Figure 1 (cartoon, helix red, strand yellow):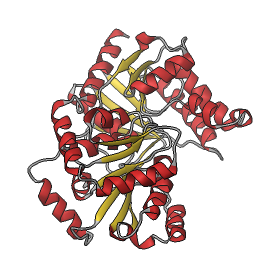
Figure 2 (cartoon, helix red, strand yellow; figure 1 turned 90 degrees about the vertical axis):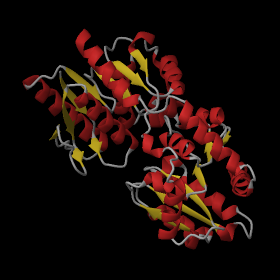
Figure 3 (cartoon, one colour; figure 1 turned 45 degrees about the vertical axis):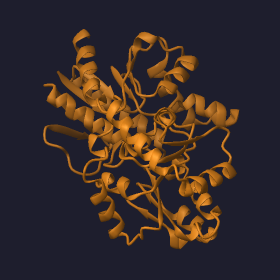
Figure 4 (cartoon, one colour; figure 1 turned 180 degrees about the vertical axis):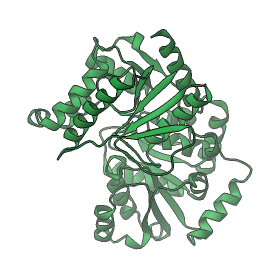
Length: 374
């Protein structure tokens, strides 16, 4: 089949973007051809994938998205594929990979009525409705059981159109025989001592991931624990607000931001705790990556994959509504807890026994099956 993959922007260190590329490569291995339509592509283009850039003109993000969709529709009419696979919500998709959570649920719980009437949100709600409304023909590849329940409740999406996938983390995240070597390498690079506690905050989109909460928790640590703690945030985002917050909290010397990197397995081994107090997240793939690496996790129950932390016994999950004091206390407790080795071992065993890696291959199989049926 000739597949058209569609997403607004590709950059190498976004979770959605990584998922798209891994599914595309699995489709290539399955014998399909893949052309990606996007407004922007950063980084190398893998061999075998054709990338078509379409400029979305407009003063706002929703205006650019509309312009992109119109031009995409025109191009697909001239050169029709067998199947259109979308990674952002938009009309006219045959298949949608649901990496993002439900906007309608977020707006109705976090925003007032007037904000929901704004042109920006009306646009995105219309595009979400185009995928999930009962009359839509879009088949949905879902990766979060929690989000499935939300979408079905708010849109009455037919069960028959939703196909659940297991997680799809890369196997190189698992702790291997070189774990100690990787840990030494990372800590030597950043000159971290054996008695220092390295707290990792990994993921692009620092606001959504709760980096402001993490900084407040670091600042709240009592001495001498605070003096031995170091927090590293890794991801693609504007760092200015968080650098300023760290300065205001008096922890600038214990905090640094790194741009997206390719050596995440080494970083996971070098850390002592993954701190991920996200405001809202469809899945939170990094939680699983940390678990299977043997890195204890402290997170919030707003992450779709937080149940894996409970199930594995590899850390702690804070219940909603969020309480900063509870996060502060949990961070201090986990950094000093004698259970850290227990959490680590449980996570490693969980990574060896659970189905956490096959998402790209199963997604490619579903895409082939849907394409054949149509």
